[in-house]
Length: 365
Ligand SMILES: C[S@@+](CC[C@H](N)C(=O)[O-])C[C@H]1O[C@@H](n2cnc3c(N)ncnc32)[C@H](O)[C@@H]1O
Image (cartoon, rainbow, N blue to C red; front, side, top):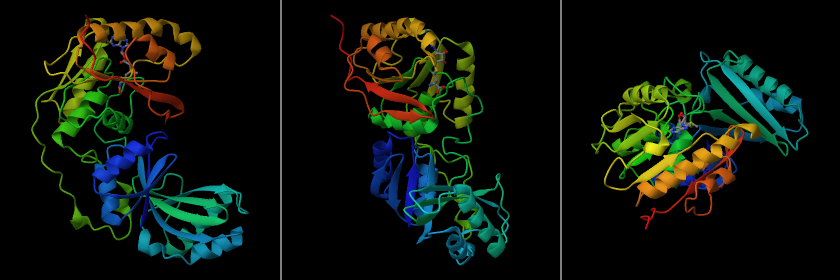
């Protein structure tokens, strides 16, 4: 089967590597995703184990359709019962590009009607399973979304602050920084604690999908008895730290870490960036996404904040590497940190962000 793993545009390469490391056969990357070949076991694995995937689509079929009547006829002949269940409702999202069928709503409606009339499944906007239909150059490709809610929803985080980093992006940025679970991590503006919690999960070998369900569990042929057993946590040193000047963020991070089962290896402290010190003797990774300031008028005070962060890290964190995520290259430069060339532009829900990285910081002479 062809499997398409969706990610934020800009992070396809890192996700492809994660999929390969998991033993998947990656065949291509394209803007916003990674294509792999595999079977249903690979689809289950991708959903449960890939930290960086937003969702996993399984291609069911493809055929030519020049007009709506033809689409309707072909759709009625498809073996829907091989893929879908009559007792599980379905919705169809369609896009049309460079095709004679150009009305995506009409295309979606034809396929929904075919499913409902030939299989007997209910249809509707809040259905349990989503079919993704793409009509491009008159070729209609039908895939099923095997994930359900976006995979950044691990089912564990109850409390979020104003601008949380999505878990999936945090995982891919940690990976981009070369993090493999064996070094200390500090986020000195930790908000809801996403980076330290994600890093701790990697170190403990906790799989990201251990606490949630997936749309594939509601497809035809899913075998309940194949229920997956979560591997036991590995042991590791307590070396994942977060701090923030907002006391509410510390309470939030502590609660989120407990829900994720990583409280024994994480620590959160109420502290402004001007007062941070290395939390361990062994140098590691500082990873941080400071506020970006949405509107131009909000950006001015941020220059002082970024400069203060840079100066504190330069003076106090010799040997540590820094990864900083921001939408503003000018702000990153204001830190005065010795950046390598920034990473690719990543689309984070419409905001274009980039990862800036240093090598190990030098001791100030
Ligand atoms: C964009 S949020 C970080 C979000 C976080 N990565 C998450 O996933 O929830 C920025 C954080 O920086 C914190 N912050 C702002 N100025 C600070 C300062 N001077 N010292 C420490 N933290 C600060 C804010 O309280 C906020 O929680």
